[in-house]
Structures are given as C-alpha cells and as structure tokens.
Amino acid sequence: MGKNLVVIPTYNELGNIREIIQADFDLGLDIDILIVDDNSKDGTGEVVDELIASNKYNGRLHVMHRAGKLGLGTAYIQGFEWGLEKGYEVFISQDADFSHDPKYIKTMLEDIKTNDLVIGSRYVKGGAVKNWGLIRRMISLGGSIYARTLLLTRVRDLTGGYNCYSKKALGKINLKSIVSNGYCFQIEMKWRCALGKLKIKETPIVFEDRRVGQSKMSKKIFIEALLKVFVMGFSRKKFRSMLGN
Image 1 (tube, rainbow, N blue to C red):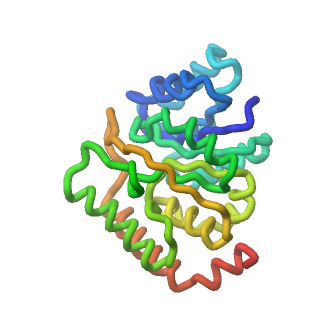
Image 2 (cartoon, helix red, strand yellow; image 1 turned 60 degrees about the vertical axis):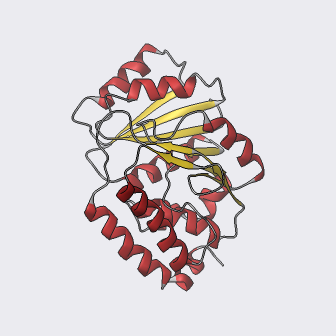
C-alpha cells in the first residue's frame, strides 16, 4: 500500500472509468485509487469490481459501494475517512470524467510536501478552462468571486474539485462536522483550511470539459450553494470554534 490515495466519486461513469483508472496508474506514481460509487445504474461499480478481481493493479485499486446517489460531499468524506483508517497520508480528490487531467497529480504530490492543501486552480496565472460556453464560465468564476468575497478568503478557486489534502488538513477541519454536500462542499473544505490557518497553495491547471457523459451540475445545486455560502459567511465565529480557533 502506498501513502497517497486518489478518491474518485462516480455515478454513471461507465464511459470513463476504465480509462481514468488506467491513466492515473500509468503515471507510475506511488498512488492507490478508491472509487466511491453511488450505485451507478450503468454498471460503473461492477466494472471496478472486475478490475479489482483481476488483480491488474496489484491491490492498489479499491471500491466503496454506496446504496444510492447520496451526494458528492458525503462520497468524499466517506472516502477520506476510509483512507485515514487505512493509514494514508495524502488525499487527492479527482473527477472521473477527465476534466481533472491526471498529469497534474505529480505536481500536487510534490507541492503537498510543503503545504497542507494544494488546489488545482483554474483562476491563477497559468490556469484555464477549455470547452466551456460563456454562461458556464461566468457561473463558475462568479461563484468563486462571490464565495471569496463573503468568506473573506484569498483562495481564488474555491469551487474547483481537483485538490490535494494532507492528513493534517483533514484532521484539522473536522470532517464529521462538514455541513455541505453538493457544489458547496468544495468551498467549505477550502474555507475551513483557510480558517484553520493551514498552508495553502494554488497550482495552475487547465480544466477541460468532460469527455463522455453528462454534468451532474443543476440549477438547484447551484442555488443551494449560493445560500449556504451566505449562511457560512455570517457564521464565521461558529466555524472558527469548530476548528478550535
């Protein structure tokens, strides 16, 4: 077992799952992969079971089967908790759809050696987004600016999901008390790291829209995130106390 765990939540990612697993392992890095599958109807979880049974990856691929579509936030939290129990030291959150290019994992693993959180950032120098329409660009960038303003943080890409956490960071932010589950989950995780005075680095990535399948983003999820960020911004003292600050 390596010390670095890549956690990939899935729901109906049959068209991507074999390829993203292979691409990650092809990097030749000291990583294990945990797929957290929310009972995908297209057989994603079963494909991962087959790969594990074949022992193609020598015990470095793992899967967690959940009862249904329970949300991105809880998928990551359960994945991180599983990894902590198994003794992993570094945790990378990655989408299955290739919008998070595996090539950046190497940089993240280098940067996390001297930081507590490394953010794959679209909104720092060198970062970019490809194959998005104007409206989606405005929603994403506007969401980060809105959250950054209300939460009084310097983190530029609060909404992105390609991140690398140290064991220290996950211990500090109190995973069990995370209140967000959807789009806002990524914001709350990073904000807690900032409130906890952890060392954060944003490393540039180029985010490319998914190759296969449909986005899980919806209007309901986005509105929910706006409201939760507003509440978080006015509950700063409460969140500080959760972190022992």
